Every structure is written in C-alpha cells, then in structure tokens.
Image (cartoon, rainbow, N blue to C red; front, side, top):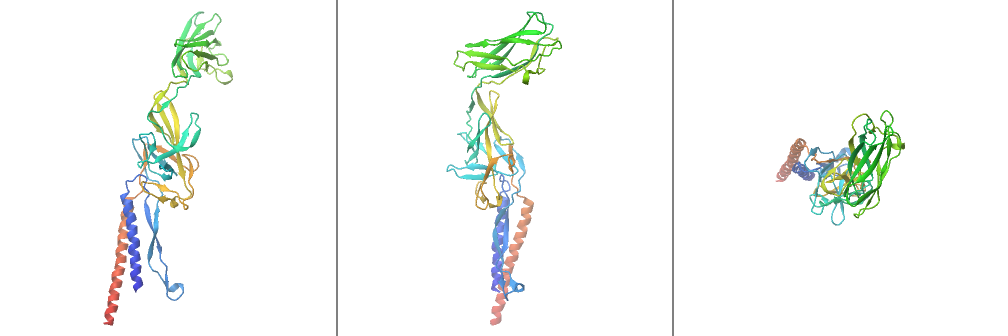
Amino acid sequence: MIGSLYTGISGLKANAMAMSIIGDNIANVNTTAFKCGRALFSTMLNQSLKGYNESEVGRGVQFSGSSPLWQQGTLENTESGTDLAISGRGFFMVQDESGANYYTRAGQFHFDRNGNLVTPGSLAVQGYELALDGTAGAITDINIPDESTTTPNATTLFSINFNLDSGAEAGDEYTTTLITYDSLGNEIPLTITFTKTATANQWDWEADTSATGAHVTTGSGTITFDDDGTLLTGSDPTITLTFTNGAATPQDITWDLYDDAGVTNGDVTGYASSSSATFQTQDGYPSGTLKSIVVDKDGIINGSYSNGQIIPLFQIALADFPSYWGLAKMENNLYTQTFASGQAMIGTAGNGRMGSINSKALETSNVDLTSEFVKMITTQRAYQANSKVITTTDEILSELINIKR
C-alpha cells in the first residue's frame, strides 16, 4: 500500500517537470530559432511479487529528460541585411573571446564598433576570408570595418561597340573616348581617332590621352571591313601607356576587338550609317569606400563600394553534426558539441548536407501554441490524477489504522 504513495509521488514529480518544459516552450514562442522541447518519461523498476512476469507491479514513472524537436521554424522576412536564416541543415559557428566555439540557428547578427559581425551576446561569427580571386583562407572572425576601402585597379582590357560609316570619304575622322584608370586609380581618358584611308572599307586608328603625366607610347593600327560591313579577322591590339605621376609604368591595355582565334564578334561594323559608338566597357576602377553589404544564398558576404564594385569579402562558416539530439543546450540560443552529438563538421552553405542562407530573414520558433495548450491540459489532468492516488491511498491507510482501533 505504501508503494502506491511513492507511485503517485513519482507521477507528481514527472508531470511537474513536464509542465516546466511546456511553460518554457510557451515562454519562448517568440524566441528566434527556438526549438520546442518535449518531456520524456520512462517506467521505474517493477516490483516482482512472485518472481515471474504476471506478478510484476509497476513502481511509477520517472522523468528521463527533455528532447528538442528539430523541425525548422518558419522564415520571417526582416529589414536588416545582417539578419540571416538557414534553410535546411546547419548551424552558424560563433566564438567567444577565449576561443571557445558555440553553435546557433539564431541569425540576429550585427556589426560592432570594431567591424566584427557578432551575436546579441557579442560572440564573433566565424567565416572564411576571401581573396580577390575568390580563394578562401582559414576560419576567422568576420571583420569588415565600416571604413573599409578597395584598392584601385589599373585598366588592362577594354572593348567598344561601334560602327564606322562605309560611305565616309578618305580623310574623314571619327573620335570616341573612354575613361581608363592607372594603378593609382586616376582617371585616364583614352581617345581613339579613326581616319578613313583611300583604300575601300579600311580605317587607320590612333590612341592618345589628355591626362597630365600620361603618354601613349604604342597605340595605332588599321582595321578593315568586307563589302558587307563585317570586320575582317585579326588579333587584339595592345595600347601601352607610360606615366610620370608615380603610377606603375608601363601599363599595357588590350583592346578586345576580336573574339577568340581572331574571329569577329559582330559588335564592330562598317555599315552605311553614321559612325557612332554604342557601348564601352573596361576593367579598371578607382579606390572606393564600403557602402553596404549583401549576403547571398551561399553565405558569401559581398561588399558594395562607392566605385561600383561588388567584391566578395567573407563566406560564412556553417557546422553540422551527426546527431543534433546530442547537442548541449546553452543560454542565448547557443549549443555546444558533446560526445553524443559527435564532432562538428565545418563547411559552407550549399555544400554537402548544408542548407542555404537567407539574408534579411530570421527563423522563428517552432513552438505550436495549440499543441502546447493541449499538452498543458493533459499534463494538468495527469498531475491531478496522481495527487488523487496519494489522497486515496491516504484514506485507505486511515481506514486500516481505524480497524486496529
């Protein structure tokens, strides 16, 4: 009879713990990337009355722990470019000042005054620094100072789409100018003058510049069209500039006049219409200051600069685990790896089993309030029923005591 008291008490304890978990779920219904927990119960050691199964009596229930439900929460759009959400598997990797690693699905990040991308708890988000050619370095704190600048890039290649009038007379000229850059980022206007020769469908060209301290040392040639106005095959010419302003010299610039193997590309013509240039492009640019950042689905943080350049700066690191259920839950939406979770597998979004990254979005809590209210009612009833076991057992014991009297 005393055993039923302990059985009832075990039920009270277990259901009290279950109610704590339900309360925690409801409290975190608006917590970013919160994972709903569920109570796990197990039977307690049976009491054997006669040594065989039919005579075993249960001794109650015990609370075995809490298990998170790892279903992904809904992704909610935000206005901040540093709000990030993972669609699929993976965790953001963050690090404290001591170098200890933690993992989180909550992507409420921001840049601190030192340019570090951090969590609300000031843990540094980890990623791979990218070189200009896209090569990734070692994992490190993501640091992009607000005053970040790009170095200038000297022009090495340019192209122009243009038409030269097939009806032009010998000696007629057409001039077009495009802006190129030296190694210091100075603008170097490059003027190309086309002069019609006495030969049918043939033009001489010569490059020059009006920039102070800059001179064209090599830059002239001839282009020829067939009777249909198609540019005849040839090789891309090179224009060489020298400088006295401290810029790297000489500077060779290739004119992308022909496609591969000298084939004409149809963008340069000699038709019977006015000479004109319709499009220009070149690969140089001056220095620029950071205006904004954009994170793509692969977790690459691209810097947008005042000179119009978009440069990949970092790629966010993601971590995956053999068993999410083995992770140790910490405060501030953090997890740490354990023996049960297995070793963290570090990578990037879109590789292997890793999910993709959504910018200007946050993963919401996966708590279902309707389900939690139902569990609250059933847990409350279970608690009441177990308390009834105790009071009923107490009444029976009182009757036994009264029999003795």
